[in-house]
Image: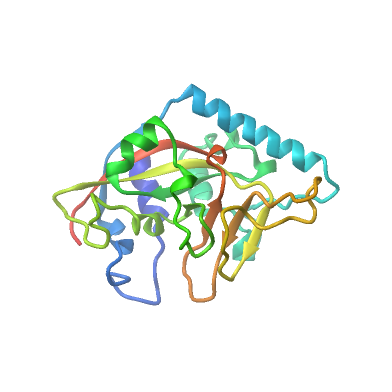
Length: 243
């Protein structure tokens, strides 16, 4: 539990541009007062098999083309190309855990926040891109973050988003996500799949994901459009001590 608490706390962004709470009607900075109640690993052989097949298919596609797929790594000075904070903190806290990831296909650990009423569906089935809103800033996909505070914006208990209650528990899930060949953008995007990729080995092929970072935005967002590119692996349940 100590590792889980540290990961939650140390992937929270320090927002220099605004004071606590950071945004009206959002939960973002309330993560600073969150205490991890439990953390457990989700085991699902069927879902893992689907995820592994998709990961292998993306790797096979990358090998079939002449275009070299850029990988996110900690040495990049440009924030868009830098390894997610979840990855660097996990390596510091739990050495060896990130070594199980396929860096050649940009497989990353990333946060996802949700309403606890959907918890059984996430554990028993998966995140479902078919339920994604067409109003998403970067398309109707599955959204992830490197910062726990960003994902905490979407943590709610039966619709109390922005008004977290200290008497309730909330949850985040730490997911494996295959980002593959990334489309980087600083502008909004509309669609139910990633943009077309001219470097794809087949006509009409797309990028595997979007990584978005706008000028007025303090958090990066990571978006995929295929359920099989996600494996929810660790479920964090927390209580908010004060808002």
